[in-house]
Each structure stands twice: as structure tokens, then as C-alpha cells.
Amino acid sequence: RFPELGTIAGRVKGTALAFDGVIVALDRNGRPDLDRLAPRLAEDDPALAREMANDTPATFEAFDLLYREGQPVTGWTLRRRKEMLRTLVRPSAAIVVPDWVRQDGVAFFEAAREHKLEGIVAKELDSRYLPGRRSRSWLAVKVHERDEFVIAGYTFGGRWNPHKPSRPAREPLHSLILGAYDSNERLQYVGEATGGFTRDAAANLAGQLEPLAARECPLATEPPLERLVFWCRPETCATVRFGGWTAEQTLSFPVFEAARPDVPAVSCLLPSAAS
Image (cartoon, rainbow, N blue to C red; front, side, top):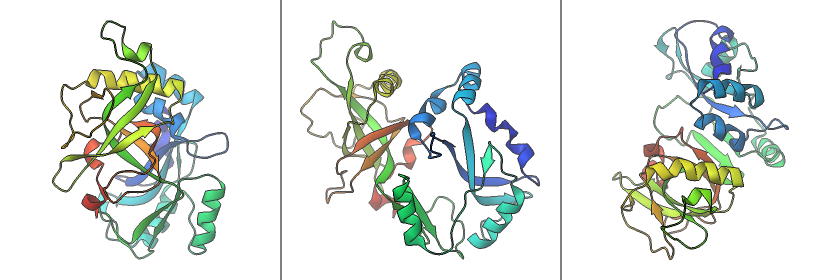
């Protein structure tokens, strides 16, 4: 999917390295853009992937070091891992090490808000890397809350007629039925995301969801929705922007932002399951 990242090996020093990071596609202002990244994540054809790499190049942002010379360094302090990471990576169009600040966090957050970024991550300099665990030593401070959720179903606009052609060919996607897993690994309903769909994004997403059609609701409890819902197997996810969590553990004002076929569904957890 990302042939342009094949040059990364030549931009790092040492062997048997493992980084933690994220693949981004930047907009014209240098901001990460999920809408630009989503088509890259969904493209499996090598020839088309090479074409897309020219039009929408991706970059790997390495923000942590996990292994060096085949040995884990997760027990090192963040300060030491960051310092070592700087020495190992020669920045290029394919890989960069993001900058960070050691103080003035409030001003840094306001700068993120001003530049319309998601937010910042505040980390204790002496913290260790804890694989698969959340920690109060690392706090995501978001301008708007964003997270990934499982797509459990979807709806279309207009009236349903079984004799008409495939829905993605004739009607706009109206909403996504969202879920997240609780501490007992049950998929719970968290809300219905409407809005945020461009015409192309809606058509592409509908085409991805139609093959996942399911006869029954995959949620632990079927929500009382007053429209026809097309349920699907809980195998793909979406990034959703929202205003917060209600007391019932549902999302306030969820808005679709991007399809995320790269995100494992099992990683989408309720706050109570992630704490």
C-alpha cells in the first residue's frame, strides 16, 4: 500500500530496530489529513498504490523506539528513548521524528488548536513504554475528541425497495451504527454517526460495507433505531469526531471523519474497558 516507505531502511542506522509511530498523509498546509490517507489504506493493487504514492505521498512519523539491535528498550525512560531515536533516524520524505517540547504545554496545545490539529500527547519524561496498556503517564489532550469505533451497521437515505439496484449506486449513505467493546468483550452500541460524508467517501465506504452484510445485529443489545438498518460483520472501523461521552456511555454528536480498515476492531474499547 505504501511503496514510497520502502526507502526507510536506508534512512536508519543500526539493525533489528522497532519503532512506534504513525503513517500520515499531509494536506497542503502540512497537517495530517485522514481523508487523504483513507484511499491509500484501502488500495491493495500494487500498480495503483504506486500511482497514489506520487499523488498523495505518505510519511512515517516515528515517535518512539521499542527495540535496538534486537533488544527491547521499553524499560528505558522516555527521555533516553527519544534521545536515541534522534541519533538513529536520518529524516527524509519517508520518515521523520516529530519535534516535541519539554515545557509550555498550554501554549503548545493552543498552537495545535490554532493550526487545527487533533491535539497533543503529554508524556512524563521518566515514563517507560507499556505495550498494550494505557497509563496516566501519557495523556492525549484533544482539541476535539476523536477515536476509532467499530462499524456495526449503516443506513441509507430514501425508501427501501428490494427491486431497485444496489443501494450504493443510487442513494447516499446516511449514517453509521457504531460500537465499542466492553470489558467482557461484548460489542456495545455507542451511537449513530451522521454527517461528515463527502460523496466519494460515502460511495467508497458503502462499497466496502456491502460485502460484510450480516443477517443479525452484531451488538450485544440492538438499539431502538427508527429506520431500516443494514447490519454488517464487525470487521472494519471508522474515525469519529464527537463532543464527549454521555452518562449512558454513548457519544455526543458523533460525526464521521474517515474509514479505518487498518484499525483492528478489537482495539475499539469503551472508556470503562480501557481504564
